[in-house]
Length: 524
Ligand SMILES: C[S@@+](CC[C@H](N)C(=O)[O-])C[C@H]1O[C@@H](n2cnc3c(N)ncnc32)[C@H](O)[C@@H]1O
Image (cartoon, rainbow, N blue to C red):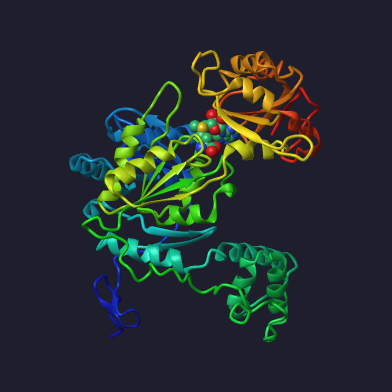
């Protein structure tokens, strides 16, 4: 008789445990129709993951949370909302279905109907109604490390995810890109390389050099090792262990690794106010990204680029607190309450805000709320639109000989108010650069007020919409006509206005796309 086939629950010697009943696969969901039943926070997380995988997502729920509405705004035709209860025909053409309602009977009905149609189903927190489970994932570019405990302990999956997230160097993402490109290159030239040679070519030294940004040297090093398999020469790649001042590649020496992250009595809960920058994901700070990756809950705003949420753990909760003019899903008081409540339950809460949290971001109010609630908090500053928008339009806010100061103003300040908080007369005479945030609608009144206070109407001015994003547009002119030009160019929020002689430099220093002559609209 041959050996018994392995069955779930049967001990497997080399793993020290039994065989999991789950078979890991990685699905290609691009353009596949995936159904999500449910409109709350759990559904939002699943929807985001499916959208990122390129799926066509159909969402069925009578009530759709603001977080999902926000995703709809970003995903466009990739997502379809059906604002009603689930009906079995919703399963038509579905490749997979995820049900994440808070009603177990609905989840059970969806699972039953899906199985009747042979559509694979995942029911949140209901293993009996799951044909597949969604693992906790650590992302490193194209590399994904998926963790599942076979449904036994989501907490353990999360613990392992955090551990791996801290311990697996981020440079593996670049290493995968380098190896992928070399594989393609060698395939094209018909060069055969053994599997062992590929494995031998991967070293911690390569990771160290990638950490220092030396992609070209790493590529060359690996290429030469592949082509001269058998050589153990390390070339002149720096070795991390012997390089003074360089960090170890293999692990992050964070002292928190050995510590429990949470204390059920709430002792470890805290709030981290993180500046997300103005839109370009590359403008998030390293500290900000790390904070997001460590958070239990991320509460984010409308102007935050949703891509930044990719750094959050798969099991972290993301809450959209976006505020738009005319519609306010959450008031400032509700946000303060939410972050304090979450932190007092022991969660690490990242409050992710556009630009810098303390520049017209109401971050101070959130910090005060934390102080009042006795919750520890930290602040990770962000790159503010106040400087980033001019910079991306080629405008230095100060420049020797042109401006030696800059003032950042809110356009919400009514210049016609008798007791306005802004001293327009001083501002007009100061001779420095004026940077105006939140001032698209109020631009005509503000320009008139500055001219009335003595600012020369021919003072150069620029309005930058969607700064640092692909859709960036700049309109230039003078303080006398910029409001009209911005209106003619249909400039919309978010936009930042710069007034002052430094704007003269925009046509010369513009580097983000092209900048036409002054007084002309430019794309990007
Ligand atoms: C509520 S304030 C928040 C400012 C933010 N805390 C900061 O430091 O950038 C929002 C205003 O910032 C400006 N803003 C934010 N992102 C922008 C962007 N990508 N392009 C241009 N202006 C932007 C706009 O004036 C917008 O109305």
